[in-house]
Each structure stands twice: as C-alpha cells, then as structure tokens.
Image (cartoon, rainbow, N blue to C red; front, side, top):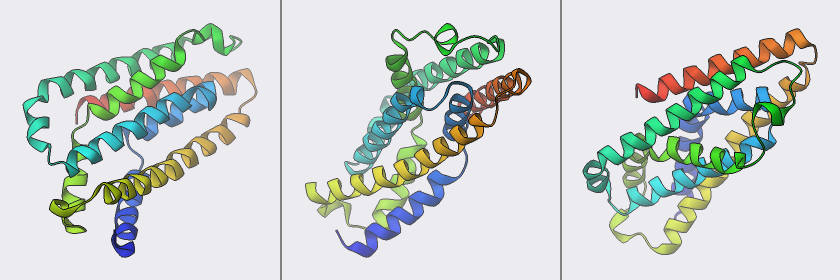
Length: 204
C-alpha cells in the first residue's frame, strides 16, 4: 500500500482510539485496582476483535453484521455484565485482601480474554469506523492480502501504543496509592469507572 495512505490511516485511528472511551475506562479501572498483569488477556482480546472488524470491513461484511445483529447484541451485553461484576468485586473488596482473594487466579486470564472479546465484537460501530475510513484511502475492490496485512499491522501498532500507554499511566498512578484509605478510594473509584464503562457500552 501507499505509505501516505497508511500514515493517514494510522493518524485517524490514533485520534479515534486515543480518545478516552468505555474500553479505556475499563482498562484504567482494572489496572488501578489489580495491577497491569491481569489486563494483558483483556488487551489481546480487544486487539483481536479490532482486527476481526477491520477484516470484516475490508471484505464488505456490513450486510453480515446486520443479519447477525442479535448475536452482536448478546455479545455486547455479556461484556457489560462482566464489567458490572468486576465493578461489584472492586467496590466490595477488603483493603487488606490479596489480589487472588478478590479475583481468583484459576481461569481469570480466560475470563478477561472473553470479556475483552465480547466488548469489542459486540460493538459493530468499530467496523463502521473502518468502513467510513478505509474506502477514502484505498480501492477496497483491488486490495491484496499484503495490503490487508499492512493495514492490520498498522492498526495493531497504533492500538498497542495507545492501550499500553494508558496501562502504564494507570500502573504508575497505582504505585502512588499505598495507604489503606488511598487503596479503598482507588478500589471504589475503579468500581465507579468500570460501572460507567458498562453503562456507556450498554447504551451505545
């Protein structure tokens, strides 16, 4: 693909994905309350979901998204329900409890991955963004496998920079919260952020 087209795609995606939204709120809340290691499966699932929507846009599957609208709604609300459950656990977590007492280790990475996937795949507006952006940059009727791979690589690079940046900022803020009072405030603020993210996703 033309380098200028890839740069314009990266710039537009950077602005759109960098704006704080429900997914970013969920990510920051999780890192503030439990640290950054537990969110890696969640991030990986979001990136995979974004790649799937980009592929769907390039393949012209908007009609498929409309046909299976009920499936996307179910996925979205599964993600919302999981975020609300996390918010409840954060709000009620004892300050002295270890991470494993609040969020069991067994199966947690899989649950985080499925939550990230449900949230991302349950939002067809992501594909609409790509449907609006990509045709203005390239001729989608002539795109090759290499062109698709280049777009996907740029998309993943941009999302990783943004999401890992938010994660690092939240992790740094968490290290400043050491007293029981500060930890309780962080837990409840994170719970409020997580519940807000769930509400924003549910009403979109």
